[in-house]
Length: 269
Image (cartoon, rainbow, N blue to C red):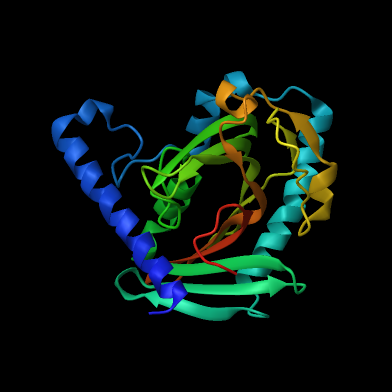
């Protein structure tokens, strides 16, 4: 068994462990099981915005710069999601129709692409809503993932903090990123993310640069992070580009996930 398939086996095992723990938690302490919502229930963009209105950005210049940057990020996300250039298929998972690809963009920037399907095209709005809702863990995310809104600009443009670890006993990592949702057409939506130059007061001397979307380096802002970040207890990771292209097809919903994240890869590139 090659290295990639070993990684996939561990990825599936972690999901299985999580689902079993989730089922047990539901039976024993349903009031504490607040991370994952009912399969038929997700918060809309407007509801998420209203819930986090106290985090509204009031700096007109930052709002304008965030919009400008994320419009560019949307373009990059669509390109990497739809282009076949440079990608090599590296494996698949039959039971959920996931196919994994990887490439070296411009010869040195690692990009992972994952495609999967949701049967029944009527689930399109549900798939989009669940991928935007910070309280729902996406199928391609690590099992132990926590996402929260750190700042809001409008219902479809926010800053998020995501914490994650591969296993329950693993060290926790995190990143901050701008995230934008855009409906390109009646049948196509993009959710795109990039970390930009966000000062979260982590004491690490590592300088993070976005080599995939260089304009992200000129977007600067401060965020009021938690003590464990400020003290350097968590390892910082950096999103060059990540997100989803969601497409409604005749009998199913196609989801394409793009991942170019330093320090957060479940596939070696």
